Image (cartoon, rainbow, N blue to C red; front, side):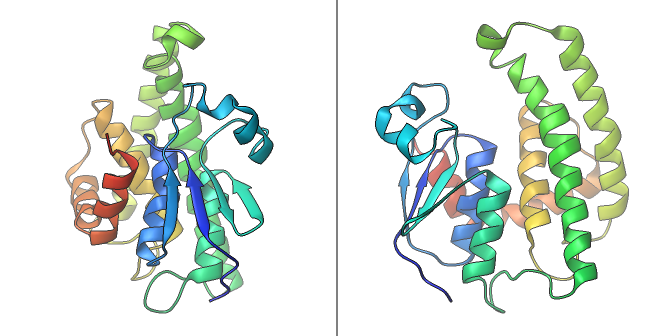
Length: 212
């Protein structure tokens, strides 16, 4: 374990801020959470802009090291603090490539291309404008790829191997997002989602991320 310093997170209330918190809880890390929200003005203060000029969440510091983006933060935490009893990065070139394949697929096709488009022109339509055709198209696109995932995940507790990995964190967060937007998930996806909802670390991260 390569402890660098006190871990702090900025950002709460979204699926993207949830991911690194879940990883931190799985790893048993102590951290401070600054539960600022996106588009609240809190990311545009001089102090926060000095930390993260992108003015987005999530953001993490580990001592003097700062990092943004949910995938990058989560992978960093696993690599620095993972153990055989918690989460570790895949051990071979092939298994790392397979994890990258799934992380990229879930993030690219479900998060960015589908669910975030629905958020952008649904929940955030007051900022970005209404685009019902784009929302409908994004939902149909997500349903197509959820069917691919459903076939692959049928009977599995984990996307890869026999333990929780970054690809699972990405997928479960997107499934939660999809349910929030009224998707009808298949039985195989609902079963897989329920397995991970039962994890203690998931519950702790959820409570922290969505604390009122």
